[in-house]
Length: 214
Image (cartoon, rainbow, N blue to C red; front, top):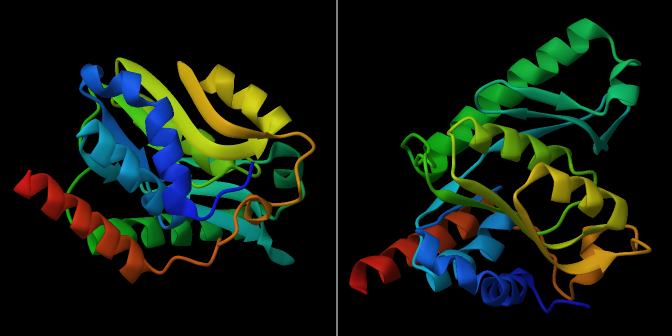
């Protein structure tokens, strides 16, 4: 399966998540690309949308390769095999910087604390999964809020990562199992252009305005 763009992927996921509308859900997403996928879902479910902000930490010799992820609360999750090869002081500094960047992004995007998921169905959305580090850490962060249920919803993930994520959540919804994985999330989209903070903010603003006028 290929998707025209992130918005189409979100609309397709929204149809598969329609049964959750009666559960008073909260939708959480990882910016930036995840915002575009999550907006149609939040709109369809008439659910509030918030962010789980995760900062990826790239390999010291290959920044494009994510080897760890850090949340805005400072929780760190790493590929443990890679972690053994890192200098501890480098990782400590990288995690501190990542936490600060995550905090800045929350202030830029929403400027308020996370909407609580206590006793609710929490739907965690991204535009795709490659290593699973970021979305796994997002699940850990949301679980701290004691939701009734956690649902992971993504357009595509490698089959082995999808199998792992099914164990991480109470429900796992995916449109395409990457088996074999085509080498990257972008391979499943006609348009996977980079999303700017401004474009993600615009999408969230439009969602809020449409909800207020409903």
